[in-house]
Length: 483
Image (tube, rainbow, N blue to C red; front, side, top):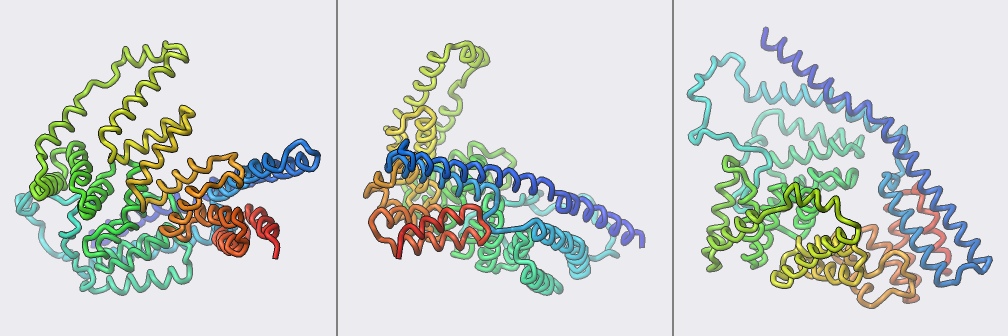
């Protein structure tokens, strides 16, 4: 009896902790919506001002067109940034939060109870302390990288009484409330436990549709894609892992699978670059350390590559002295010109190294960003081109290259064949990408293909939702194409 009282108190406390952020986050979202409305109002005023300047003769047609495209781009970005593309109202948001609260209130204790009744033994005597570890004396960490060809042992949850019913109940709840991102993620994790990997991919996809920037969901979907493909890392999984890696370069799971993707693409040198760097960053007691080391040794032996020299080079690079406190202070005391010269020198060193290592994707990405900050647009374009060459299926890298080819302020008459070909490639790898739809419409309109431009921009309007603030801008563009 005492056990059940303690369990009930702990469960109630846990529910309160989980519900508090769910039910108290409405004010912040409202403030964000107001900020988005203000930004969009400014952009609308800018469009009106541009039209007045054109009518008054203060702007030429080409200058007006370039400025108009840039303001419209910013409207789209603002709409996306402030989450207005789904047409959600405050009332709908409150309903979603209450639904999430109901899931927490009922699903958490019910799931715990069903699982405990199925597999627990409250009357079992305590296990002696010296028998509480497995044969290796270790505990497996969550989210550790695993060899895709050797997935984790099945949990056997599908055979446990109550689990299937819980999953079915969650599926029904999501039919009634399909905008619950956390609910979709919970369902996806349940599918993963029961080895229904393809369904897990779809569920994580629904969660990411609702919260596209959630890196945890992206990494989990990438892993589900790998397991659904029987250990192969497909392009869609590479895109998810690349997104996570760019935002969190030290995250081990994405680094492991990106190396595995290079190995499966018959690029053992590229795989070893990922895995040796991961090995160097991995703590000695990390559960996945032995796996990564094993992968490195196997890949080196199969490809005839001296991994010992690669490990030595990695250690040497990491042992290179960084800036001391005196160096940092000296940089603060430099004049703007001297500091700029120092930065230029660092960037030039990176560029020189990349000439010797032209397949270093992360290096090209960093160099492109550095050139962009320094205003060296031509050099930045070349760096973006090299990154795009190395990652042809990475949507974000391809879009960065597209923006470098067609930077803000470029008139539509400045669309090149190179840009048009890149947009076509982006449309192939991500047909539903909002940027791809917008750029595709620009290219089609520039070529006089009004029908295609209308089709692409109409598809973009549907993705934005009926209440999207930038909808009027796109509708005017479609109307301007004529019949």
